[in-house]
Length: 282
Image (cartoon, rainbow, N blue to C red; front, side, top):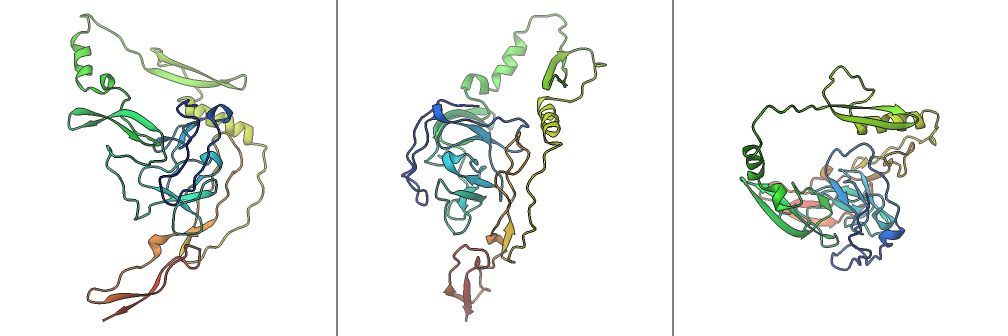
């Protein structure tokens, strides 16, 4: 989905991100969301394309952020290094201690577009405007968010029996998904439950005769882990293969109580050298 929000953003405000000029949204092709998202949806910092926010140890960044933006609580970190990825390089989504999770009403990321929406909190709607790439608003207007609206709508409904039908489904017809909803005939049988499953069926058909390049097994050092490959929805083969990257959660960075930490060598964020080396002295 394309958003004509802004055509140019210059990244100047966050240390670790180089100043970066985005391609205008008019010249950007946004990949479709065919299968739905496991987590939140996101819009890239360029303000052009909506996509599924990338999860932990999934690739991110790239030219115009085409590989994606990370989910809440994660940052697009350098694949080899300890800081943020430098766009247009590809990064990896991980939790960085120097960037703690923000409160819902705070700016998520200064490089992101300004968006307005509402959250439900303790029985009322809190509508705010902030810099964010994560589309986690409960609603996008106070009228839709107000919890009293549902009650008032029911209170004002005309008397008399009303019948609501919810049966739905999709079939693949002539190479496309044909969907129906709001049906009362519950005996009607469909190939797929919804458009997401139907799209998966279409892609499986398309990819059934596709052979992806062979990938050799990768062994990572003990302080590292293998990232998740990234295959755009609708594609058959990974666009970004798996690679070794530091897993800083494997590092022990604390000394026992009563001992002081004396640094010998600080991690450079490269697999095999991910963890600090230090002495614990009395």
